[in-house]
Image: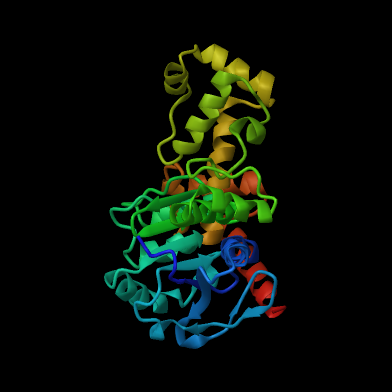
Length: 330
């Protein structure tokens, strides 16, 4: 364990349009730790390839030091990302540096969608990890051998990943506790009125009851099963058997509590998942169709168009145009 009298250098590698909230939630506890202790426990260093400044979600640039000149002087380096795949263009220039640092014994972490970069660099193989729920589907489709955990953060040896948002506050509480003890970590959290510290295994999203607007136990279990059975949808009879109810009773639950049918609810979940893939990934329409349980691209396109009022390729084009307009304002 690192000597408490030594300053730990913690590097943060922001990726274009990184989420400012996630970055602040990760760095501010370290600043507070220094203030409370009266000593430089941590040094926070923004890093980038060639020391280029990087723009954040709030529209201003963060000045960085050169990642190539870091050597092995860092305790941990976090890749902090947000946005979507269009923002990650060029991020592959990070990968050789991250792999080198990992070989040198530096702990490598990721915040929000930064785990996608770690996966692309081959640094998450044989490790438990998490990623922001919005990008979990894209990661699974791109790297089918990897399965992210949908928890707030995961500390697995030399890999430390976090879902982003305010979850880095919880992650930093755990890391500071490990180094400085629970009492000191509590003082840091209290500094930010962070009285309800989340556990690593806490979910990223609101409860299923909140998201689906029902507290019916059987219905919730079926809706949750739908969310994880997208590529190979279960039939109504199979789902009823799995839930331990009759098919007729299952139909009645959806009509009474969701004001829709089993088939319509399932299709909506699959199509919403498909739209995220269409807008965020480079997967073809056919690949998205098969990834969401449709037998062919034509069937998928018809269902997508009927549900959203625009074709898959138009949804992709609109998302790309919106991102371009956003960048033009920077």
